[in-house]
Length: 112
Length: 116
Image 1 (cartoon, rainbow over the protein chains, first blue to last red):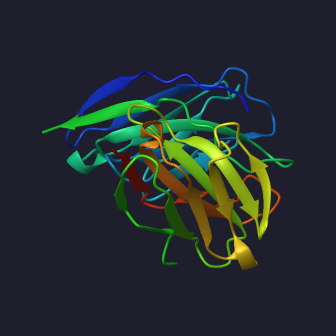
Image 2 (cartoon, one colour):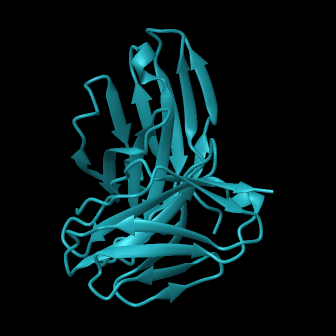
């Protein structure tokens, strides 16, 4: 699986949009971009994933650049409960696509 | 969908004792994964099952660790002769094996182990 690069930490004001970047410059054509988050002392929570089109669900939006070398997770109206470590992971399609490889992620702190 | 369930949530044990964690995956999920997470690090893959078959074990899984999934439903992770370095959160996850990356992996809340 390709590696990802994320900033170690970010701050965001409550009610504002949180934009979390991720670089995955060596991503292959059959690799999806997944985002998970982990609130303190809890298991990772799935947020969203995409291949090349932008995706949106009830939690967040995922914007993937046209060359697929980077992506941005957007939390449109961050709340204090969104304070967590956010992990960007690329995962191969097909074959032995059985696991996720986590990095250190980005600690997002939402401030009142 | 009741989610992935793990028990116990917390365990404190003395060095040298054996401990066992149980994981109940989301029903109908035929893939089950174990991860370990230490403070300040992301989760690290330990092993995974497809149905009852254990298909991969990480080098992190020493001989003192054993995982089973009899009948392809729940799974247990046993650590024998625990050491202080085994203190960590042990995460279980499950997914469908659909052959595509749409088989999203869902995690449980984890089991914290403290070895004293």
